Length: 177
Image (cartoon, rainbow, N blue to C red; front, side, top):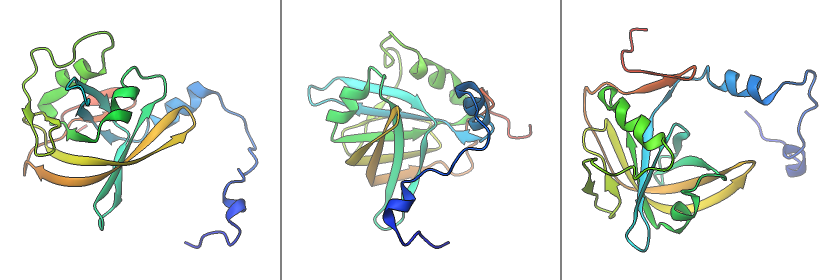
């Protein structure tokens, strides 16, 4: 793939031939199957924060970089913007209840939830299929979200563990669907 020779051309959107609604856009995005994560951090004041996110992917192997995004309207945004480290916990098939809990608003998401302090100080959720402990590297405004780019300081995985996945607005824990 070649990049445009004119950097300004990359910022010019292609003309749309057929308009679509936000609902149609969301439904089409829902056809992309994703893993499910809980992103956790500790604020400078020591308060634990966490949320369910499926907007996670790799950026670079060298240096080891990942990204995730958070809605601008999220009440957790200020906490994540001030956090120096966070953990991205990729959930296992049997952790659906945690995904649902950390997606709820207006509750203490950590109440009754087992966790341990990771090497970076961020809360790590036991039983995840993979954990990426990250240092906040940068964040970028993009539409109605903020994209967080993180440098992975430590990672581990559970070999053979089945992941929790999300598709079409539903969780799946049995990949034989």
